[in-house]
Image (cartoon, rainbow, N blue to C red; front, side, top):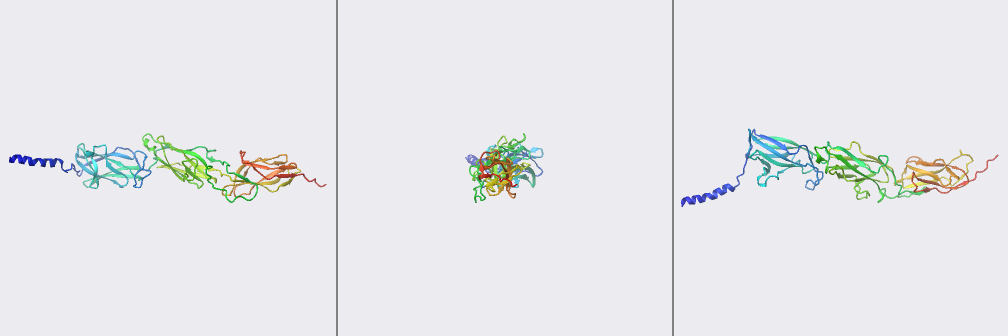
Length: 416
């Protein structure tokens, strides 16, 4: 009976030993061997966009994480059950987490007492995942420490965007004449024959009438780094006050930006975006960058101003018939103005309504820009009659700006 009681008392003790909190493992000793092997060869990518907690927003370039295997040995034997601590310097560079491919009850690496600890299996192996969760980039060090010893392994975290190894990084724009030239449309041009001009010619960004050009960027990944292109962010920036960027060809005010971010797809092309140009025009320069590379030369587009007023002013309304072909008369001043009421250069075609009465000395001209005297148009008064000067944008039929009517009177006979 006493023996049976003793046996019965031993059963709970054995159960307690079998299910208690005794944890497998011992600290790796001095002089042990530690080998660190990441699954990913090459760089990880930092996040481009992060949330309020500093965590990456999807989609992302790959790879942004890597599995890491640590092999622990003591002498020539696998250090079964030995553990080491792992940290990252700087701490914000990478996050360390268990390898979820392992059974949850047998994960070899996990957080314990504020440290990330890895315990070797029977084969001397432990695994964890290192992830770039934020937008930090640079060289991160994995530090494995044990028995006052440590071993470092560097992992490079590249900034989001294309790596330096990417090829064929370029910008393609459509609808440009002479390679990089945006012409005026003359859709807002009005005519006047008087010296006074309107005090307000409206917005230089006319809703529904803004000149825009479609563009996209592209790049090619090297064969050993195919994930570098897909979801790579590209930043396009306008460096000109009179040029903007938009994802909408209308370039409305709520869509226009000075900086625009697009993502490349798996083929290495971005979705289309649009260059937007004000009526003032000028030289529009853009910077295009992605990660570690940028276009070697900033794309530059010459944008002609959009004329708002074309003034055809007659210096007099009556001229006398010329007695010889050499007798010409400076009869008109023609000037064009932009939205800011500045005099601008503008190519025009010239035509007399009746060349038999008033003959022009030239059929076209380029009007003077700001700071230069207005362009004068000379005529030959051929015969008595009436005629007007028609001025039109070069190669356009409209708008047709006409002068006041000019009367050519008969020449007075020369006195003997």
